[in-house]
Amino acid sequence: MEKPVLIREDGLRRDGRRPDELRPIHIEVGVLKNADGSAIVEYGKTKVIAATYGPREIYPKHLVLPDRALIRCRYHMAPFSTSEHKSPAPSRREIELSKVIREALESVVFTELFPRTTIDIFIEVLQADGGTRTAGLTAASLALADAGIPMRDLVAGVAVGKIDGVLVLDIDEIEDEYGEADMPIGYAASIDEIVLLQLNGVLTPDEMKEAIKLAKKGAEQIYKLMKEALHRKYLRVLES
Amino acid sequence: MKMKILVADRQIVRPGDVLAIIEDEFFDKIVHDPSKHIYMYGNRVYSDVVGTVNIVDDSLNVIPLEGTYFPKQGDLVIGTISAIGITNWVVDIRAPYKAILNGSELIEGFNPIIHNLRDYLNIGDYILAKIAVFDRTRDPVLTVKGKDLGKITEGVIIEVKPSRVPRIIGRKGSMLNILTTMTNCQITVAQNGVLWIRCPDNDRLNALIKAIKTIEEKPHVRGLTEEVRIILMKELGLGV
Image 1 (cartoon, rainbow over the protein chains, first blue to last red):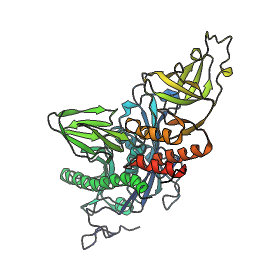
Image 2: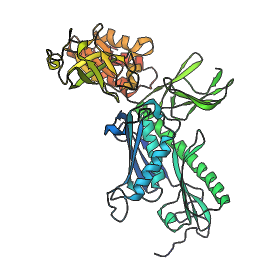
Image 3: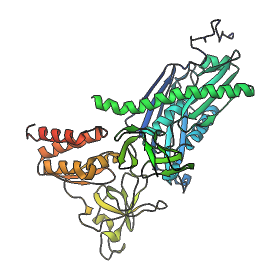
């Protein structure tokens, strides 16, 4: 396929967004009855569900950490999430993303409160259109909060990309494929900490600074929606 | 510690929400108070969990709305026997750890050669017990030596979310008081979210269950005690 026009003549993107505009975001918390905590997050056409269990007893026993809880995280893309069938076996990429999401969340969860236990996180991508790791991170942090696990802050994930030389927020599949750079970050807005940062492609030092500023701005908007979603779960009860 | 409180009593807060500004101290490291579900960092007090704010005089804490039961020494718990060893029973107390009840607790002059633990408590039996020892490095040990402790042989067991226990008891026991006096039932509230109920008849039992389910569904509602009183009056046919 030939490279599509990523930035139109009027300065807007393929889907009509401004460079600093997010896709429409939809968040819901407490969507699974069996899990201790759960959340579903949509960034445009990307749709991710996350479930958490724990703190609970750890099996196999040899994984026990004597001083804190073990966090286990599985990021997985459903075979039907992409236009071409994806093998359900965990790929190299999925194992890597599980690791970086786990490490991002380890830095905000108070694991030392629950020695010798495990907190299990399952992230399932239902529909993929770019930004699945960031949507997954957002969903996982909401699911942890929904499970009542003590943590320093919620984490909002968002990606900044460079397409046709322009820094843009929250890139989708096509922009990722044909753009020059993709930088997903995880941002804990209230305590102002970046807990995940990856970069695929090339940015100049100045662009990097600009990109982080842009990502923080986008993450703050998502962060606000996350807090509203957590609140909404309890308001629903009031209305009924 | 002098602080300016930014939230209202009973307000719903989420992890990372700023609860108060500290005026006379500065924390350059995170100081966490797990029992109050708050942490201090910089000149701010943050919540670490989804819950409702509880302000008592000048100090504040957060009562979580979700979460699994975490054992504490001295807690009253109701558990089921899940396995039987040579000298001890293994008890499921809905915590991330298995609880241990030693044979000598129930049998005088216990000798594993003479006594068979199955003759005293079998798998699936409910017991009311106290946590005798728990230091987080080893599994909690239970005791049944005390008034009313031991095997549960009558009544009904109801499981609720452990985070609802403070609400079922109410401030200074107000809620529990209404539940017992209006229905004439005996209620034992265990800290792990299991209730043991003995009612004179089934009508009262059903009314009580309905009231408890209401508390479980909307713990964050203001004037819940009054609502429960009305439900009980209606259910018991006392007229409103």
